[in-house]
Each structure stands twice: as structure tokens, then as C-alpha cells.
Amino acid sequence: MNGDMHKVISVARMAASLILSNGGETYRAEETAVHIGRTFGFDIDVIALPTGLTMTVRRGEESATSIARVSSRTTDLARLERVNAISRALESREMKLSDAELELKRIARPSPARVALSAAAGGGSAAMFALMFLGGWFDMLAAGLISAAVQVALRFLPDQEGMPLTCLIGGFLAAALSLALVTLCGMGDADRIILSNMMPLLPGLAFTNGIRDSMHGDMVSGGARICDAVMRAVVLATGAGIAMLGFLRLGGTFTWWM
Image 1 (cartoon, one colour):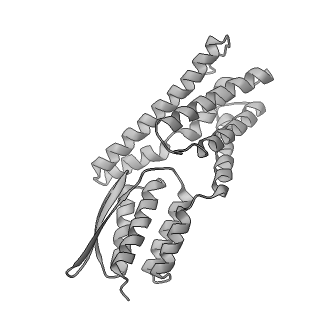
Image 2 (cartoon, rainbow, N blue to C red):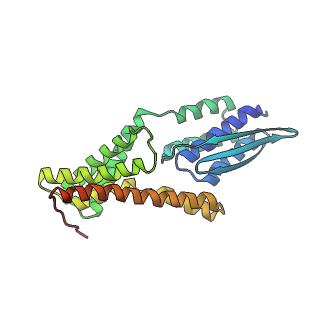
Image 3 (cartoon, helix red, strand yellow):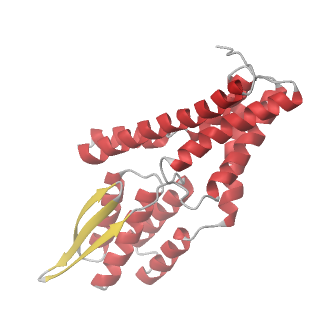
């Protein structure tokens, strides 16, 4: 049974927008929209960019066009998996179009549980990076606690993914809190803790997606993602550098282990 054109374009637009805003590749967003349209007997032409998408749905002489702006971008693989599951359920006719629309709206809503999850993931990964950098138990504990605190702080910024403000604040907090904790406790290696806290903030997935988009021939989106990732890394380093310079100006000292 064919779905209503406007309902189809609404679901396809929401699915593609969620993929773009949660760290998915542009070609994957386009393919998802096309598959949803074909499932209900429509042809969809879609152009996806990191900052938005345009799609036109056609069937016979009927057509409709929709444009969506992607104003904020983050990395949430759980949301990507849920959107892909909805797309597969629609294609296999295991889910109705109206149910898919409700579920996509539910996915798009912010969840307080995600703040705790981000804090736990950031803290755990930073602690493991400290171990990889040959840090001791204090370095692991400090890196985990500081990284969790930074993740929570960034989640409550007005524009969570606003670049460069978020990256600048993230880098500054990671370095400043590390230096303050080591100075107050009189133990631990500030350099290892700073490096461990910076690692979860680096835009590795965005850089990888940029390369994958470029390999699929989408040079505009690929180049934009790579430039965005490089800029974020530079701004993160700038924020950390500001904190370290301020610490040195206040009379603090530290040495690099590398």
C-alpha cells in the first residue's frame, strides 16, 4: 500500500536529518531517504550536505519538495542505529508510516539519560587513554573524573555543538581542571591527564566520515567535514593552550613526559 506523499517526505526528511545531525555520512542519509521513498512507491531525489538537505518526491505527475536545515551536529551512534532500524522495518513492512514518524520524533528529543551516558563514556575512555599513555592509578582516576565533568559541562551549553565556542571551552576545561587537580593534590602527571582528557573530544569520526564521503565521490561534503574536523582540533588545542599558558603565567610548572 502506497503512503501519502507528504507523510513519506516528512518521514524521509526526518530520518535523513537525524543521520546527518548525529554523525552519519551524507551518502548514508541520501540512501536512507531513497529507500524509504521506494518502499511506498515514490521516487526521491535528494542532495545532502553536512548543514542541510533538499529532497523532491515524485510519483507520476505529482511531486513535492522539502528542505531541512541541520543546525547542530553531534556524534550519537545509538541514534543512528535506531534510525537504520526504522528504515529496515519500513522496507520490510514491519512498521507503519505513522508509527515511524512518531518513533523518529521520539529519537530527536533530547534525553537526560544521554548526559549521564556521555559522562560515563567520556570518563571511561579518558581513563583508558591514561593507561595507554603509561599513567598511574591517580592519572586514570583524574582523567576519568575530569573528562566526565567536561562532557556534562558541554552538554549544558546553549549551543551544544557550536563551533568554535564549544571546542574552545572543552579544551580549556580539560587542561585547566587537570592542572588544578594535580596542583592541589600534589601528585599525578598533568601532561598525561591533559592528553587523556583531550582524546575523547577530538573529532575522529567526523574526519573519518569526511574521507568516506570523498571516497564515494561527494567531494563537497567530504571536504567540508574534513575542514570542520581540522578546525575543531585546532580550536581544542587553542583552548588547552590558553589554560596552560595561564597556568605558567601564574607561576606553575610542569614537564612533558614525551
